[in-house]
Image (spheres, rainbow, N blue to C red):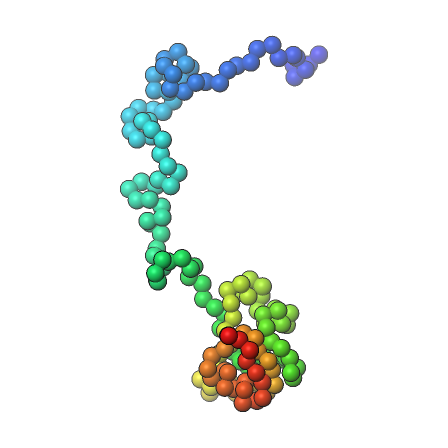
Length: 152
């Protein structure tokens, strides 16, 4: 017979905190001496002089409910890889590896940046149906080529 195979005869009872000197934890019950932690329960959110939620930065807007995440801004020229008369939506952008699934959760907006940049001569040359939010100049560019924007 080995030591770990012995039958348990006696079990040691749990120490009863805060039940006097004979409880096994002494006069202060394992809480040290004095102070807020010795006298009562403290909430988990307590971090000192200020509560944790008060230390966090405020977000703009009424209620501050929305997280401060910005949409992915996509140049209209990147849509030129699609074939004519294609319906462009989030799934197609992920499928063609223009954006990742993680970026798609933030949202996408299509801009006409080519009009702002003189160096970048590329622009959209396809007739597309876009089901994403677009800027006014991007909408004009898509509709000028005969495409449609179907986003409300």
